[in-house]
Image (tube, rainbow, N blue to C red; front, side):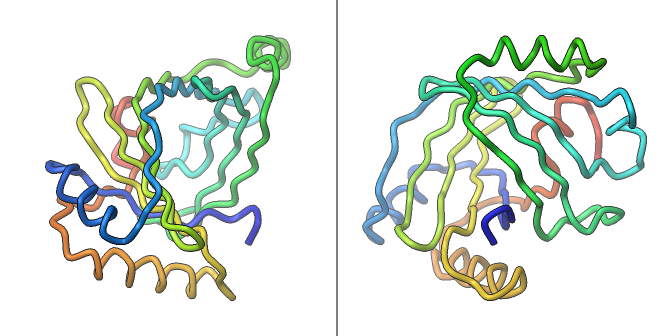
Length: 185
């Protein structure tokens, strides 16, 4: 499952309650970093054309470096996604990647500027606390353990979230670009 992402996102009104619970699980806290995610549309197919957006191309710049990422969320036509094919790699020069994309006809879609603090429950889950100005605070749980299938990973992630027994708020089934673009899905 190297190139597969299984995650769940929730609105979060009380990050400290969840952090307290994670400390009790001996999770490893991270340092808050600013991430600027620039999303692009392809010239050969409009990612925004389908009723349900299922593809994103992104360049991320942060205090820790830069990366390029392409995700395809599944099931493609469904509003609620179960997982994504995710291809990500570090990039040395994000401006060069931007120029390459522009030369190839890719156009900017939206920029997501957020603060992320990631905690790790070793061998199981990455927990990312995200704050977006004028949007809100969220938590993403990304499965990082061993699983035989997407269903197995989803079941383990669900069990972990349920066992936390911490109020999380509404489950969010769309990404930050969706929110900023005013898209339901």
